[in-house]
Amino acid sequence: MSAAPPKPTASPVPVRPASPSAVAPPRPHPRFGFNNPKIRLKVNNLSHPGALIFFNTTNPVHVLSNAVTQVLQTLYVPGDADRNIPPTRSVTLVLRSMPGVAYTTGTDLDDDHKEIHLSLDYIANVTSDPPSRRPDEIAGVLVHEMVHCYQWNAYGTAPGGLIEGIADFVRLRVGLSPPHWKKESGGDWDAGYQHTGYFLDWLEGKFGEGSVHKVNQALKNRKYDEARFWKGLFGKDVGRLWEEYTRQLEKEKSKPGTGSEGIEGKDDEDEGVLVERDIDLKADEDHGTARRSPPSYLI
Image (cartoon, rainbow, N blue to C red):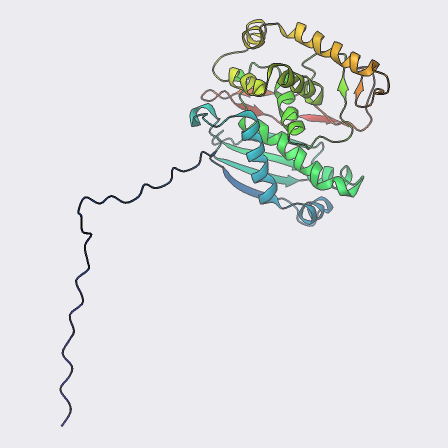
């Protein structure tokens, strides 16, 4: 005869807090941060020598995520509401064979989705001397292009040289300027690229940290009016500011023992300097951010 099955044991009743009014400790407030876009990658030819160099020297997720952070931390400040930052939702890096270096554009479907096209031919041919500079050169180009995903452009009316100068200003500030860049004491302030980038860096030093942040924000909700724009920000027209900057460079050149390293006149030509040409800046009706058709380049 089998033994009788054991009787089920009742589960203990959970103990309730002694005081029903007890409150859980407050949860820590989340730290302020920028919203990161989705990062995508498209490679047209994995066997291209430039693709092999890219993947041997660069972690695409790391370099693109860093570029987003560096751009947002340079052009914006904690406290900027989302509405003050262009609503870029995704950035796709397209590696393909093409002339030139790189360009950035919005997609035809939605300008909140950006594409950065980077030349595999450039990676293979131009970044090879010295090979140790390849990671920094690739990262620097991507930071420059990432700026175009997040800057304002006064509904397409801002000078192209200012747009490109802001991009190279950011590249300069994050420590990715190439060795051939030089400060130029002549020419026009809006010649663009490092020429204008160094001028903006001087403004940042003269008028205080965040000056270029103010320049970018002033391009958000209005069309560009040169006289009102610069006087409203710095109390002087841009021509006068440029004269002060060039005088400062001339003083630096004339100091005994300093020489002219890193500073030169506009008439001096840099061999191997890459210059974008024929940039078509189109206003986005909703956001006023830059859409750029593919430019041609001069090496």
